[in-house]
Every structure is written in structure tokens, then in C-alpha cells.
Image (cartoon, rainbow, N blue to C red; front, side, top):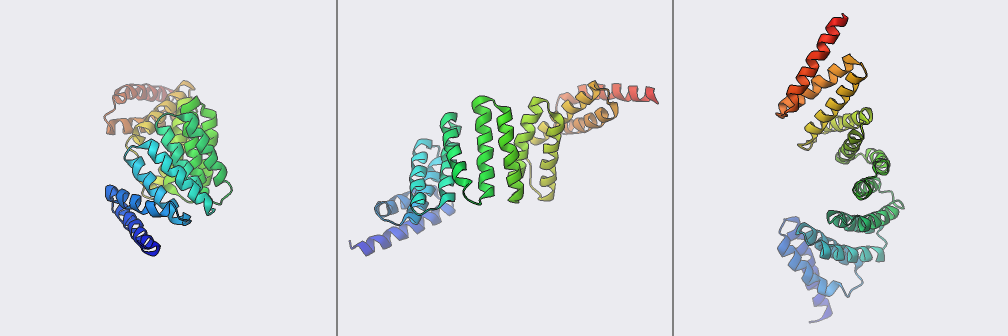
Length: 273
């Protein structure tokens, strides 16, 4: 077949593959893109080649074939590099890092995530950098249980996410912050993170994860008990009452024990009057 006809056929297969992928027909998309790859892998059309490998990587990732998915993303990275698309390069290494993280291969995950961040810092992509730093925080936490390092990454990530005006990303990062801070007993700072979460959720009508209410209730409980131990009965009562509302709505067994503590605090406050 003449070379012109081969290119036309490969272009049709590539476009059909993209269409099938957009429609959620992953098996059909994979077949079309694999066929297109027979031509494009030997061409200099790196833009199309990068896109093919990227989509194949996504399909394989979704199917759970993480090893071959990484191979496709690495090939996509090289094609993006060939035509100087740094954001595409960083996106590919982000995905490789996530893939290793899902297999608890945190050393490799960290290596690729750091490479992605280094590339991303040379671009103006604040949103992408925020996502990369969030991933790096998760890796640091799981690899070393290094809360301080993770919080440092999340602080920078949150600032970038706010500047990039991505409310969902802001919520996801602030939730990670709150979880770590609550675990460390830094309740006041954890409250600030949860306030950001709830403010952005309300402002942009974004639903929160189902477990959010329980986590927020636990924080209110912890903070209320801390205020009780410190003798700050008014604040303790406020936080514990908010906690019990959440626990009752989720049928949490803590509700009964909190009620008895609330009654004690109310008795103490009445005695002071």
C-alpha cells in the first residue's frame, strides 16, 4: 500500500480510537490505537504519537495493568519531550508515580514524582504543580510516616491550588491537611483546614466524601475534649454539641458518651452562674 494511503488509514484509526475512548468504549479504542501505532511509531509525528501512548496508558491503568501502563506513559513522555511539551512530560511522570504508589512502591513513586515536579516548576502550570505536590505529600506520609514533610508539601500545594482557582483541588488538599493535623493533635490548625473544605464545598456546590462528616465529627470531639481539659467549658460545650449533631446523623456510637460529657459541662456552667 502506498505510504500516503498508510498514513490516511492510520490517521483514521487514531481518530476513531480517540472517539471510542471519549465514548467509554475502551476495548474498541485500544484496538484502533494499537493499529494506528503500527504506522506512527516509525514516523516523526510526535504530537500524535504522544497522544496515542498517553491514551493507551490511561486505558491500561484503568484495566489494572499497571506495568504496561507505565511503559506506555514512558513512551508518551519521550514523544512529548521530542516536541518540547513540558506539561505533557510532567503529566506522564505524574501518572507513573501514581501507578507505583498504588503498588506500594514508594521509592520509585517518589523518584518519578520529584522528576515531574522539577519539570513542572519550569512551566506556569500552578494546578499541575499543586497536584504533584499533593501526590508527593501522600508518598512522604506512606513511605516514611513523615507528617512534617507531608504537611510542608500540602501547604505549598494548597497555596498553588487557591491561586489556580481550582475549588475541587483545594478541597482535596485541605482534607489531607486536616487528617494529618487531627492525627497529630494539632486541632486548631486542623479546624482551619476543615473550615476551608466546608467553605469551598458550600460556595461551589461540591459534594464532600461520605467519610468527611465522620472525620469532622472526630475533630470536633477531640477539640472539644481538649478545651474541656483546659477548663474552657464554653468552647468545649460548643464543639461537643456540634460533634454530637454529626454523630447522631451518622448513627455513631460515640453520641451517647458525648451526651454525658455535655451534661457534666452544662452542670458545671450552671454552678458558676
